[in-house]
Length: 162
Image 1 (tube, rainbow, N blue to C red):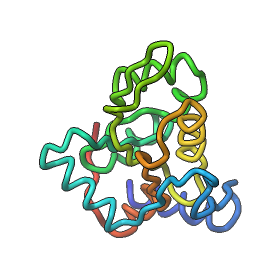
Image 2: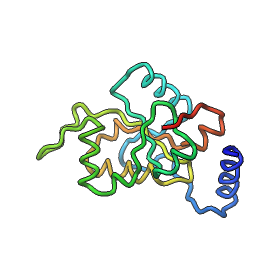
Image 3: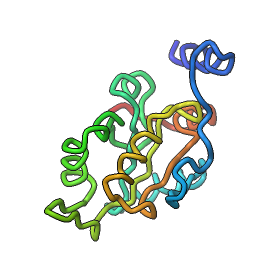
């Protein structure tokens, strides 16, 4: 049933009945945020699984999506909406992303963020990344998995429940 639901969502999206905008490969110019593919994502999952605490894999989808489709292994859910409000975003950055927030933010220990959402038609991760860049997060420490859950599941890769 879950596969049928995902197939239906994919067909509706591709047919244009479900609104979405194809995200560009490098939507954050002039910032040098790296857009990554599936093999790079698999390598980040392996690194995180091996105990690398300098990496944080973030599912930026709204809270219902991870429950419906699961998440990429080792990912945590931080909905993109948490980055829209500066106070909430700074709280997340300090509590989870390794940023020291004072009068000036210190990014010395900021984690490398590997962020994804539903896929190329989804704007949730680009919205979160744009906000993080606005708050000073280093572009070199942000990776954008543009294919998202749609590509991950289409390839039959493992997902886990939160």
